[in-house]
Image 1 (cartoon, rainbow, N blue to C red):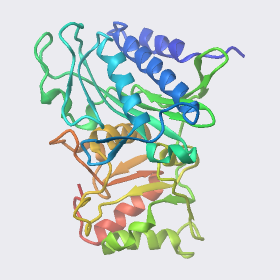
Image 2 (image 1 turned 90 degrees about the horizontal axis):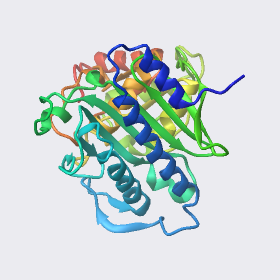
Image 3 (image 1 turned 135 degrees about the vertical axis):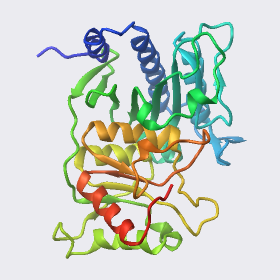
Image 4 (image 1 turned 180 degrees about the vertical axis):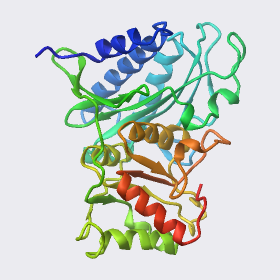
Length: 341
């Protein structure tokens, strides 16, 4: 059977949309090229000088890894020249990234985490690039403002991630189902390998960093106790799996089912609303899981309905199979929570 490339898949989607102009396909093509460049560097990271720290701190107060910095610069360099963006935001940059006047501007907004999970590079663990795409809110040919960036996740027109591991994959949705593409290095193309991904209705795996147990409130402890209880509705304890690379933990959850949790750390003054960023992590992954018939909440409320107030806003993230996410919501509601974000 002939293999469908990601470009062919995008063009087919474009033909089905009478409003399509080809600029969206151009945007995705530049993102794919950026991912190929990053994938090449990740695959030889132990052979070149891209491991270790730069000595700088990012906006989150975290020490910047060299490969983080490289990935961020690749994405900015390629995407600002694409001619289809009016502004960008990165997990690594404190402020919005304007499109230089020497390059043409467009009608799309890109928000990205250039290299999620990079603290695991030296351990050869899967890492990835997460991205989110919106249409601009400000008038065409005007200066972009924060209004273009601070849109709720439900307004996304597309989202996805590239995961760099034993193979490089692209998981992507433009709002009509979720599809996976695997990079064939022999031809340099992403080929359709996982059409119409659907997360299992329920799973048998829970994923959470239990090292933060002392920071959790009673409701979160009850949630984890449920998954460990042999008397739960699964009829046995759930298996615990936690990698510490969001894109890797999410990818496993998406394919196998179950649930990933990064709750609010109520007693930790550094992370009272958890560690994950709404705009560049929670929103795109929530968009993807809903396209796969899964659910994503802050524990109670739908992530995609949250109105952001800042670019680097943090939010609790409970994401995965419908049964497990609803069970967590039920427990939080019993404890009287109406909102955790």
